[in-house]
Image (cartoon, rainbow, N blue to C red; front, top):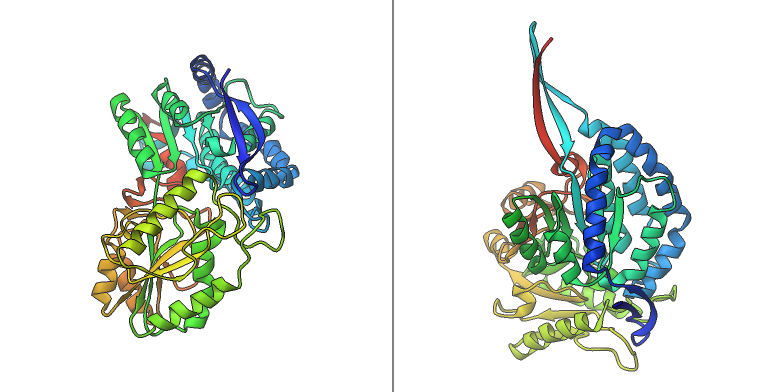
Length: 456
């Protein structure tokens, strides 16, 4: 049987475990079980489904430290960032609000008739998630689907298979009926086979390349997709801001999780009058940070998830330097460190032909460009095939709102107000995906809408 070898990217790729790759027969068997279970799971009703999920949530809470340490080992996430409390709060929000969001809606009523919308599950959901937040993405994809009444066949990224095994163990530790949840292991070929199986919905978070492949598979099968894909999110800084007020926030929003966040700030667009000040302040902020062993409490930047990710990032930066970019800080692999480490980097003198501008940069590298006018800032912000997140910083709130209305992205955050609430839908424009997660919109993406009209 083929094995999936798990390695530690911060310890020179030492082997830390292995799991069996799911065979074609296993995929077929688990999808068949999910199909057998879907009707009973639907008819159980949302109250009972949530009742069965609550002890599972409690088990995740009990074992969150174990899960966090595995995330540190498998993907190089600093232990100080491997906190699952926020994701577990979202788990609870889904359970606390699912029934309200998916209750029947009366659309018309008169003396003789009543008309209502009923939200019904699609059936079997293939949930395929990435490696950057393995437990969090599992919660985002699986729990709302189960609450909505879909059964789930889950495939976690091959980069964090040991986290996946622990998730499966926790999910199977309580009283979920057979076939309601199962899990697959392997690389992208396993995910593709799962998507091609007898499923009724594909829920995917990951790269745009893979998302488009899954969209084509879904189109051939004529089934629903929810896709949250890549991003190259801009942050626009107008000249009226206090630079010192935004530097730490920009640092966090670009460099947390070693820059491996889909909607991180990936292009910083700064008014020319404050450009040098912003760049110098960011340089000073970065120079204070410790790159090192992610299991150490002193470390602020760990490793990338894998050598392939490091190779991609190095290629993007070398392309920029070759085409004239200036390296303000970083720009290389740190000396005397074995693993997928890369120094936090600022690049200036960016041109639109550089890969760091045209591609998604999934690592600790930030290109910074200047602008003169509001119109130019908007043009630069929208100069990307992506449209996931964005930020606007200005004391002129009317201007900030005007710019926000013209940015083509699924979310715009103005100044220091985070949109990260589970009640807010999340998703992107353009090649960043389709459909939404979270909130009312996210729950209803997972349901068929049926209208029932009847006599009183």
